[in-house]
Length: 305
Ligand code: GLV
Ligand code: GLV
Image 1: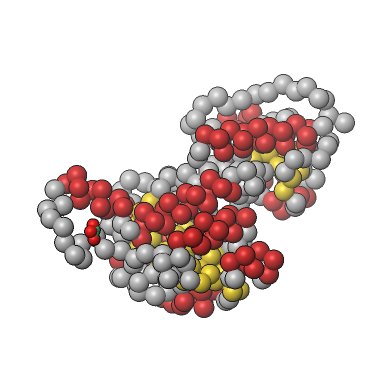
Image 2: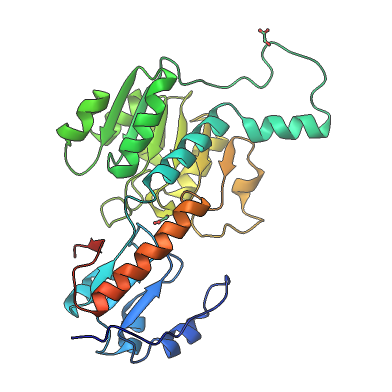
């Protein structure tokens, strides 16, 4: 049994906790509340020692946690699914529209004097009406994205993932297809899957070469699902029209990264769940997960290892 009240040692800054502080601070603790920017690997687990019973992450993604090691040690994991689905889906749609209708570029033209007159083909992009949208990972967020895109007049939804999800797909009459077919047939590809050993580097040279030359690629999951060098080449060579990324490797992306000089790439700083209400709900949920774990009770949202 764990105590109902606990003392807290907190890294009280928005700057990431230095590794040395994390390793020293975690020693002997029963619980750890962490962010997606904290890599919780064997070194951290060893530093924590055998007291550690629960890790609660302020994120839905758990790819920063060494899950095998954690499982082996009988540590439980709390995370924050569901409550961030709407905000992340909304941001995915915003990024898709900003990318396919070239909004950052257009705003820049207004400011830099590029807007001289109304020209028929100037600043043209690609719209959603009549399009085919391919969703990589029709999970909670993927479904919420499809639900929001449907009213824009999307003609067809395709999806791919580890297995078909007929109950989820029925709402969108979405077809389960292999990755290559999704690449070939989609006008818009939206990546909303989680990062696992299976999805790491999944969007690579082969994938981009199968995409239509008029297609747009959106990623709001994790940067490492994409081979970023291959995406760069696809954007530079005109293999695809544009990309919108809320996630990159590394994060933050250094300001001299070549991606930042591409007009056909819209990059956001990992803000999928960044609404006040969502971040506040995530904070409460991750605290409740931690407390429940410390008390040995069932957590509001436990990640099944
Ligand atoms: C955001 O990327 C999350 O995993 O919550
Ligand atoms: C656009 O402003 C139009 O009038 O077609």
